[in-house]
Image (cartoon, rainbow, N blue to C red; front, side, top):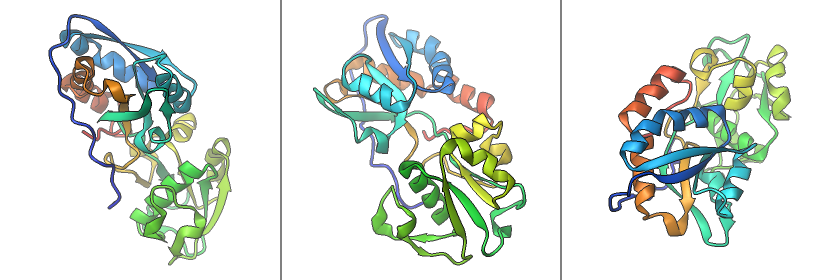
Length: 256
């Protein structure tokens, strides 16, 4: 995919005093597991990271903006860009993991086998729809208007060589659509809820370095703080790299 995330902030800083407590918002079990994998390394780096659970990424971002947590790993950068607090914008300081959207089918073993005129189920949510359409563009299933950016809609399709038909469904209905749709685009959480793993079950999936990789976010005034640098080092450490590979078998991807 040619569209990419702008360069993230490079974090530097002075050594952190022992055990600065860093409260980090999470919205998935996998987010909390990631912090647990970084815990020992973080202590060595002088920070004690504590997960704070939220129902979704938007609530975690709002809590960060309001100062109720110190950081968040519950959102990707495009979602984060819409959040502002009393201290200004939230900023991404490092990538964490990518929870990939994938294409699933019970009738086609590969995307090249998708029949002309097939019906494709897509998420009705505008952000997830855009993400699925960008993935379709990447695989050559459609061609999008490049001016649409990171959130294209169906009107932004400029070419549809297989004359695919599209049906928009609420996320809870997507997995069941596999029974009567040739192809279904499933966000990671919807796939996981249906017992599907992208690396094992998808016939197409996002790369690790898409613009929708999750990020460690902080409030803008904190971006140069020493604890931020220490937290980044911890989350991008060798033990965390090994954990991601062993735990998720490439269904959760590492963009750093």
